Length: 230
Ligand SMILES: O=C(O)COP(=O)(O)O
Ligand SMILES: [Mg+2]
Image: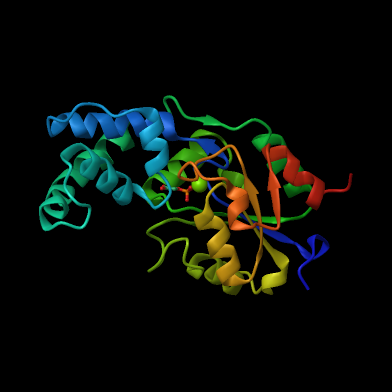
């Protein structure tokens, strides 16, 4: 049975859920575009390109800037050439302008004290995920970190959540996915686990409610009403 009182473990998305990472992604994207002689793009465009990992972000950025189709061989060749630059540019400034969203630290603390097991399930590359968690002092909350390149498939595929269920020897009805993107909600539905959608993150400009998570929250701290004694 899918009910809140069964939940004992929670998988959190990272970008747009715990951390507002777009400001640093904008800097890295524009630095990389500049190296290919393209003009900078707006924050709003970068926001709309986040969600499927670093490579898709640059693929969308290069396609926009060059007017080449995303799947064209020319664009793919340019992407292969450009990715090392993006990874360097972003790696050098992961958390200069990025911020934890309000309520994240206190709520993670409360959930930990209440006995929930917490994990990160992100599409961000692993090499950026752990340093970011550490930089914001939240790495200690998570006993499992699954990134976009940890397994053969990333969200919206249910593979990371299914891996977590196996790892933790959990029934699907005990796990909750919390995220800002339809990729998080689709992954949850595919793994048959409950989900909460957050409205403040990045979802390609779409209303997260359209993906029908089990609940929609406007602020991170609001997830507590389903999980903590009120
Ligand atoms: O890196 C991305 O594109 C998205 O990352 P997320 O899965 O933590 O939102
Ligand atoms: Mg996200």
